[in-house]
View 1 (cartoon, rainbow, N blue to C red):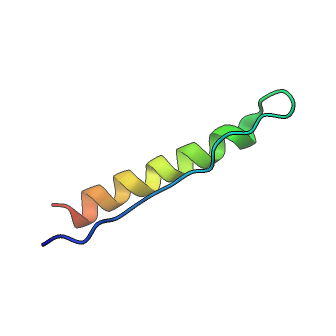
View 2: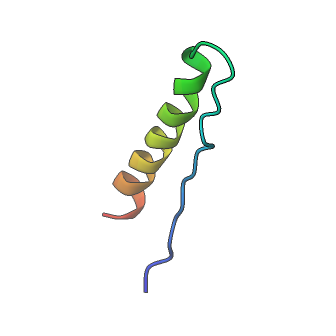
Length: 42
């Protein structure tokens, strides 16, 4: 049985105008998930 791999990102609480920092976390999570999928889930 394959081990499960979870990648999470925080909910974007916007208290002011959105900026690149809000997007950065989602991009990092996406890159990690895709990297794991390519290397581990062959």
